[in-house]
Length: 171
Image (tube, rainbow, N blue to C red; front, side):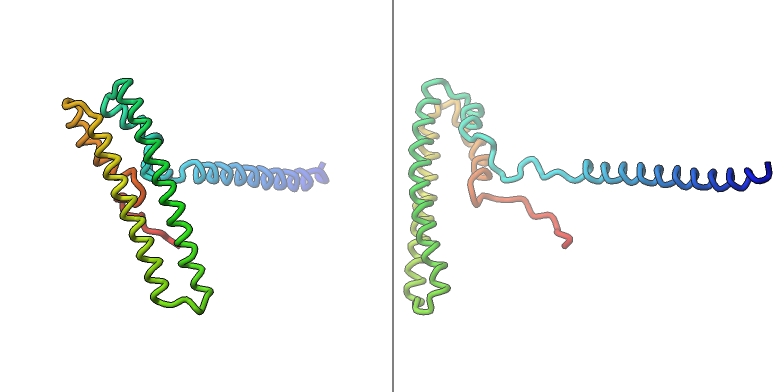
């Protein structure tokens, strides 16, 4: 009988160690799950663009079917215009940055490209202004107050619009 007692003691110690390891692994798994699931989510206005500006305008201004149809035409026309201007900007921007590799590019050539980019950006902003003025003209008098309130939301949704400050990074 005395011979079995040390073996039981050794087995008991090994069992306790195994229970301790299992408990440690369970605690580690729970901690990892809490960290992953509890991670801060990006703010809801991330990107600042509502999922569908057309729907936002239609809902906020309570457009009727005829106004919605005209709005769709305005948006399609505006998007085509902006896409063309964006394509021109990308082409000029590409030429501008390709000049980094070209030691023959002069300051005058670079300034000319920058002026072209600036003029295209001005056309985009004027186009947006005209687009929103056309939407405003779609409004009935009782919708104009809602349009004024909506413009603040629309400015945030535009590329380059006001952004909230960045959270500090801890790199």
